[in-house]
Length: 529
Image (spheres, rainbow, N blue to C red):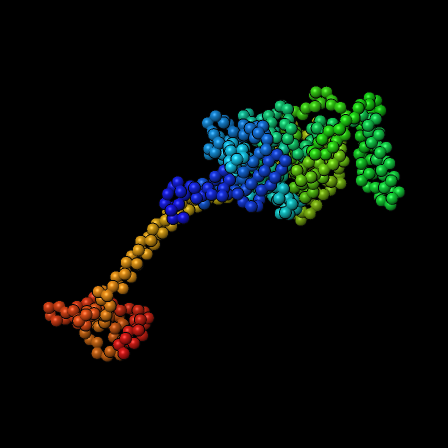
């Protein structure tokens, strides 16, 4: 360790041992894995302990195209950067208030594997964890409103800025993290410029109906629907005959009946084929026209996704049943989404149901959900309109604005304190180094003194007398207290006392404090006896 501390090259090597990419010490807990990436929480050993950029999240991406897409979308320019370079804040395209900025990226081979990964600040937790484990969803009205406004402004930031004009495309709780109390967006591999074709990456549990209809191709022929209806009726009758209720079959029949009604009697039958969707086999008619095969990026896609997340925040419940990757669990859920018209009243009844003091905001919260979770033609045109017109989000002349301002001031204060702590840690490191060096020097001196004292030539015999020679009682030590005394060393060879020209004993004068005599007096007395 001492060798490593004394040599910069050796120190860098010592820090890099057992790390990822030679600089990141991966944590055992806190990461996750999906179909498209693996995320690890880590410590950047090249940063000092007080550095705010020391704790990071590393997103290792499986698809090169998605890696390049997110990198180019997040940064203003790649021409001045290379793998492993620190990225200045102004090189990030989006405001750090709303989006977790990139610290650096890596595109390199390490221990025989080729990695493409993004490195960003580590979040304290994501919104999915907050909803499931912290108990604020459906109950903590202040936290819910703070989140609602914070995220609406973040999405507005992506949509409205002249240099941005992009949608997030995969807005969901796992892609929202909390850092120093603020909610920020992550994961932009599904993001795309407004008006451009959507990417192939999505979480179907947060897609709007118009996009789901394209993806799942649910414009089935009447003949296919009727055939499927007969099969479900048969399964239902068999279930009842065997003593079961047949709830699943009855629910699927309800969905199919609705589709038959919507399709109408005049649609021509089409051939049915199968394909894979979200790792589930999905029965569908042949491809529709080219325009029906594509979804174009629109701000209303993010508005719908925002509504789904707000439903979770306001009720503590999921709007749809999803799997571990936030995709719709089965064909029934896909049908519920693709045939969506308006949010049902029974779902709205759950809004703020467990909130002790909702402050009369249930109605405005329900209206917010009705606006976001409606068909595309009924949804607001932008988050600017939503923030201005929604009484749930509009905080002008309210206490919430004051709270937000206070929180902002507190955050700025915390950031200033963090900078001071960082500087203090640097000074402490320097102090620790100086103390260590001083300690080493003292140890050397101590060893030298011990050697001198062990040497037989050094004086070891001594006695103490009052400086004025007034000492008469050799048993009573009180006359020594507070007086000047003389310490006299005796020659160990001749056992004689060194004297001056006037034949007076030569020695060293000092004062005997009471505490010193009290502590060492018994030993002196014993030696005199």
